[in-house]
Each structure stands twice: as structure tokens, then as C-alpha cells.
Image 1 (spheres, one colour):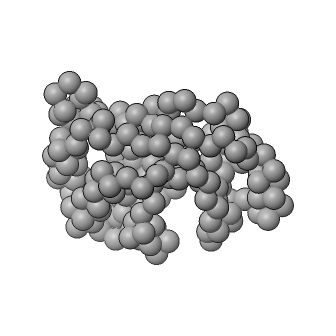
Image 2: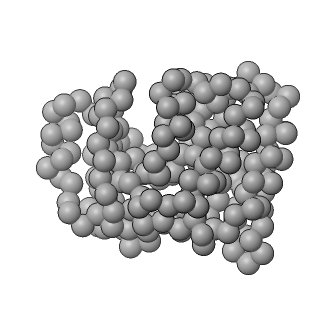
Length: 193
């Protein structure tokens, strides 16, 4: 058995300068991403079918319609500490994509945790810029947050990570990732496996 995770890969547009250094201080240097489906169990023999379904889903979306503006900070407490996120304005297109992915790909297995399942049910498009912070770290991070929190993203691809262990460090390894690129011209998905 393995785990799969699906996220949106994108380019940041008009990112505030302070945002470059903030995650270096309060997060591990993970690539920016927007999670659409958290780690979910899957049997090895179901992986080819998962990829075909995901490819079909991606083909139904125009990346221009998935562009989003992020302009709000949200702080949550998780089982591993505080989490700082930049939240997108309410966007129905990304919610539609996320819901379709969760519904069509949830057939393969259960989420790796109750927290992940809850995230999917109460989906809020966001980018994490600080995680696993204790109270003192959170207090310092709040002092370093600046008011000019506004940037846009330009979606490029859907990233499918398939891993043996449901941890972020495994998901970011290139050998564990497949890409489903949005084709700007034909509005079709291009799959790189």
C-alpha cells in the first residue's frame, strides 16, 4: 500500500519581498503548493487508474479560471503546533476542482488522518508559510508579518505525489512526483510521468 497527495503547482505573481524570507525562518524550505487532496491510501494496482482519472479531471479546467488572489493571513492550531497561512479570496473554480478531485479519487482509500479528512471537507485555498510553531515562535512570527499581503498565483500543473510514508519530506522528492500540466493554448492536460 502507498499514499497519494494532490496539489496545485503555480507561479507566484507580484509576491511581496518579505514573503521570500518569511518561510525560511518559520517553515522548512518546501516548494509553495496548494493542497487539493491530502495523503490518501491506495493499493499499488490502482495507481494507473488513479492517473487516468486525474488526467481526465485536469483536462476539464482552464488554468486562467483557476488564478487566485491571496490577501489574508490565517493562523490555525494543529496537532503539531501553530500554522500560518496566506488565504485566497473565495474562489469557486478552485473549490470545484478540489471537490471533483476529492469525490472521484476518494474511492481509492481513506485519508491518512482525521485531520486531513477534515481539511478536505472544509477546504480553504491557502499557502502555508509557517508550520509546527510553538507559542514563542508564533509570537515572533506575528511580529514579522507585514501588512502588504497581496499576491496572485498563475496555475501551471497538478502535482501527484505517490509515497510509501505520508510525510511532506517524501512528497517533495522528485522521484515520487508526476505532473499533469495545463496547456495554456488547447486547455488540455499534458501528462509527464
